[in-house]
Image (cartoon, rainbow, N blue to C red; front, top):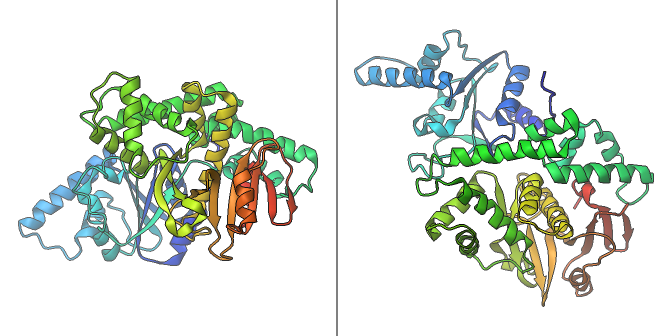
Length: 452
């Protein structure tokens, strides 16, 4: 029996159900992040009746057959007071339209017709509706109408470090840790070791389950490679001009090379150009800028990469979007940084930064803890600050430096001295934490415990 991985998103699913919003819940996220498993478990535990339809499987074929049959009959004069109810009843004869029933349509990206009727499903039935998808196809298919229904949206990510610790039954150790150095040294040492493993394997559920089975980093990375291959193979369905696996490999590797560069971010809209240059240089191909642009948008929309903004001179009103790129899973970052031969010390710094980026990104979602659409780094003079954050509630500003050892962020210190920020937050790899005035130091793995 597969071990159950406790996910934070489960609580949000329950909140949606209890809110009585009468909106369809659309669950999105990258491939293999556990959407289907989570939704089915939620339905089994919270409803009396579950009707599950997967548009990539036989259940989906049968459902679409009933849909087209009913649509044809309606066009021929068949009278039906509630076509939506009739459709579900034909597919599932024991269907009971009550608040204790949930209808799940998985892989919704496979049918724009069904997706575009979400409003009718929600408004004509008492039952709850959940649709799931990974964006595959929707960003390229113009038939999908993004305002098609009354939607509540929930995006599922890979397991974060807290969820990873829950899977290992070590969450209590983490939640009781003193961020400012008051716990036993053994606590910090164990969490640092587990954080190191997490950074190597990432949080895809299949990879974490492999880790729970034998704690083999090599086996976990083999599992991660399978996920990468799955994404690559499915992507081929939508890109006629990018058919070679090597091109996709170089897309990922190119992103890792860009991450490894010491620079103040790329100019707005130049990321695709830089990536194209790397791909064409490293792989003999006639791949065009347009193809690279579409591939970048694809990777972003599919939950593989995310962007960070740039705040010149610590002026938050001068925010510039898409100034840096990160992987949305630290395991992916580690895998491709290793693949391109990035020096271990450099790679460790990038992965740590990627880890903090992911935590900040989660805080920009609803309800937002920090301002701006995405996490952002900042510049001050000729220097750079890893991340700049402004708390929504307190309106206080933070210069965040992701450091190893005893390194200090000179630019962040200058920002404090010049009153460009209210606090300096160090997220370090080998510290037990501490506070000195408005300078706060925490173990990097404790970032999600920090309250802005």
